[in-house]
Image 1 (spheres, rainbow, N blue to C red):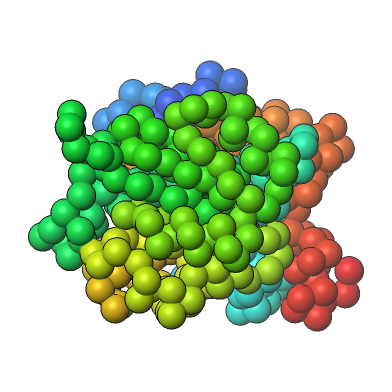
Image 2 (image 1 turned 180 degrees about the vertical axis):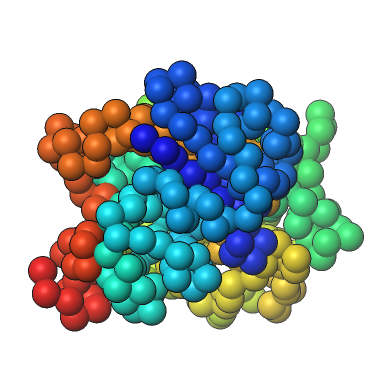
Length: 363
Ligand code: NAD
């Protein structure tokens, strides 16, 4: 199969659909890979590296959209890209169609076969192509929070790990799922005094067993949450209620009872945020202060560590790409029902129930 990878054109997107290593894997398995010149720049991968990996380097996105059977990307296609998609072509990328009627209409019109990373499932009810980005965001949340805690960034001037003779910072992680677990790992690694709150007893048991005495766990109810937040130097918002907006767990009132200069990192901002005072920010200006409490609310945290994020994403997207290239997408989906869950649009129809229902398409 001929597979193409264009440069990402969405604002501030530095990731790329295929690393040179992934392109090489496709090549050694008998496929042809076309890469847009400069596509890997954001992760420090040069055209030379792609050439050495056996790719053909093409100028601009047009040859890829015109002549490749499968287009591998990271972000949803932008309007310019959607105009280039063709009937029968496979588009393999994040799509997030439910809140995006314009994109959905264009994909339907194009006749493309669009497979969304975010709806491919895995065993145990997880979304394996989203998981690495939650891992990245969780780990990064502590880095971002530690930075914001520094005096020159408006924070309390607390070092998370403390030093011998001085207590460490208190880190409260709300939600012990993928983001929360990874955040707690980093905070524990830095020597912080870490507490994890969740409502799911199984999650509490899992994190409790993993961290043993290195972190404490508490059931997440209003009383426990408020108590934890009042004493925190750094709070990580890492909750998710699938299919719903994030619950507002910290009210503006509660900010007044927090330590001045404490930091809130709202990772759940992409679902509306779990603090009443959260509003989405960008990497260009990631923080703002309300009532003396520093807020970090970047909605696309993984974009800042584009290289790590791209490699983490490729680890989970490449196996499906290889199987689709070898067997064709239909046969690959017949053999793997989890991949079949990724099919969102095909031949002019919305093929994913939740998107069809949300946007009023026949299913
Ligand atoms: P997850 O499903 O693995 O974990 C969410 C956890 O929240 C679950 O354990 C659940 O029991 C818990 N929870 C729900 N309500 C709670 C409450 N009231 N109190 C305490 N815990 C509660 O989800 P995840 O992958 O960890 O993602 C968490 C959030 O981070 C999502 O909104 C996700 O979209 C977001 N996210 C943001 C970025 C970013 O760049 N900002 C990147 C990746 C993920």
